[in-house]
Structures are given as structure tokens and as C-alpha cells.
Image (tube, rainbow, N blue to C red; front, top):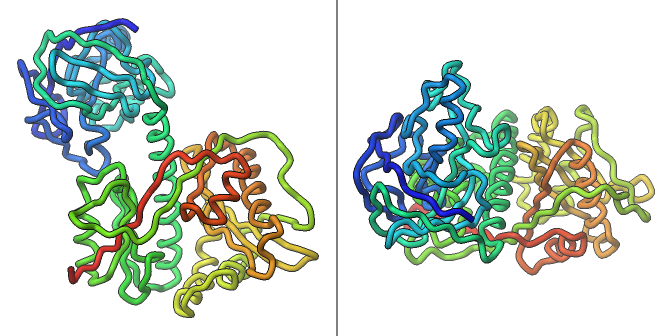
Length: 413
């Protein structure tokens, strides 16, 4: 791996271009003196610093684009290596103090469109131009950097960063699936206040107590924005549940611990045996919700919501419902949600009298196969840590990539 140099440090009060400074302190929150306007899609400790190579800038400029250092919002302009070619988890030791770790590609957005003669900001997408993307980094060791500092590259020593990248994709798929579910309930006439902004989503409903309709997602990536979730819960006077990685506030108490699992699609025949798994057509209503309700211990009020929202959820293009049948009788149900090539398995339930017969594993297997057919490159699911569902996922080859904890937020506390 080639070492390099820090050519420029760029900051702004928000937006682009970011302007050069001779030196700056770098903390876990980012480069001091720099701000992000769109805080729900940028920033946070895992995206504290954005980096772009001068070589990439020169390649893009040679095509006639007015790009220059800082114009696309990178904090650090570097030379000597293509930063987007570095593996996630690669560390950059800058000068004598700061150590960064590559965390993920920086998705291009319309804010930087004026750096391109045709306004097509996708020119910096890692999917279409793998060597010309900006990259995010987390701060391993804080300190001060200066223009001209040497950069020493250190290859990844564990797969922790890779697992984190996968977990963030799982979180995004779960978030979009949950929002579709909440919106279906709201379309059915239930009062649910939904905050869906960038990469965070929060729901609140005083009339529907419990975590299903009073949840906050996306805060493992953006723990610095927890205040938005708490404010949303307080405004609706509800007890909410926030899903995060680390404790989101002092003395936060864990309500439940969820294991995150992922697997790449494989071309193999799904499990069969006595059970038949069938995907429901958009106009086949009633069986799916009834199975979820019958197989789960939920209050009558919440059960009624599930029955009422199915009509609206069935219309969501990226949502697919399945039932498991034995001798023609429905005995279980599950669903599948697609989001940007990621498949999320949710709402899998089997009648108690039919448990222990491999039906849950068959539901998982068939949905995974359907996800492969639909073009998913990764399949994810969540299960109570150490529970039966977790064991089923592990038996089918799913890899445990992360743990998320649910924290109860009582507005009166």
C-alpha cells in the first residue's frame, strides 16, 4: 500500500464549496470548524470525515468538469493513492497524531452538482466510477492535522469495519420496511405521527401503545441525533423504543437485545417437506395478517390494526407477503421488503401448535430464494439474541454481523 500526503483541509459553515485552512483539530465528531446542513444524511461519528484524492479530481476535471479541491465537500484532499480503492477498515495515520479508519463510500448528492458541467453529480458514485468516489472515515485517534502532513496507510486487521458496513445496510432496509408498515397503518385510519428524514425514522401513536408503532430507527449510524427521537416521543406524549448500538443517553436501560444476521443469496432449492410456502397476490387479503395475529401474543387493539393495514401494505411495490400451508391450511406467515438491493425478512410467525416442525426455517428459506430472484445481493433479518429464530437463521447459514439494543424512552423521565 502506497503512503501519501494531505494536500488540503477544507471546511465550511454548511454546504459547498468547503474552503481551505492551514490546519484543524479532528475529533470523533469531525473536523472542527466544519458543519453539515443535512445532518440526517451526513455526519455522525461513523461519517466524521470525508476524503477525496487529488488524482480523482484531476481525472474528472480532464473531462471538462469545473471540479476542484473542496468543491464536492470533502474535508481532506489527499494525494498518492486512490482513497476509494482502499478496503473498508483501512486506517490512515496522518501526521503525528490523527488516525482515521475508512468506514464507507460517500454517496453523491445534488448539493455538489455544480462541480459538473452537466450537473450529473453521479460522476462520483463508487458504483459507476470505483476509483473516483469520496470516502467517509471515523476517527480512531483525535488530534491536529496540517496541510502537507504525511499519510501512512495500514490495511485492515479484522473484519469489524466490513461487518459494520453490512449492518448499516440492514438498518436502512429495516427502516424503510418499518416506514412502509407505519404508513399502511396510517392509511388505514390510525393516528400515527411519522418522522422520516434522511436516515432516521420515528413513529409515535398515543392510541397504539407498544414498540410496534412507537419506535425510532437509524440511530446506530447517527447517535448524535437522538434528540430528534426523544423530542418526537415527547411531543406525542408516548413511551417509545429507540434502536441503537451504544447507550443513547446516560443510564439508558436495555429493553431487548436483537441480533442482526445477513447472508448472500445462493442458488439452491428452498426447503420443502410437509410445508408449502406461497407468495400472496396483491389482491389476496386476510390470510397473512390473520396468521401474524394468531401466531403472536398481541393486544386486541394492535391485532385489529394488523388486519386493517394489510390492504394498504399489499399495495407497496417492494413489499411481498407469504403464507406457509400444511395440507392446505395456513399455519404461518412472513414478509419480505426490498431496499436498494437489500432484502429484509420481517414478520415471520408460525402457529404455536406447528412449531418445532421446520416451518419457520422453510419460511426463511423461501423468502431468501425469492429475494435472490428479485435481484437482491444481500439478505438480512433480526432476531432476539439467543432465541429460536436466531438459531434458525444460524442453521440456514446466516452470519451474525451486529447487535442492536432497544432502549425504552419514557417521556416522563
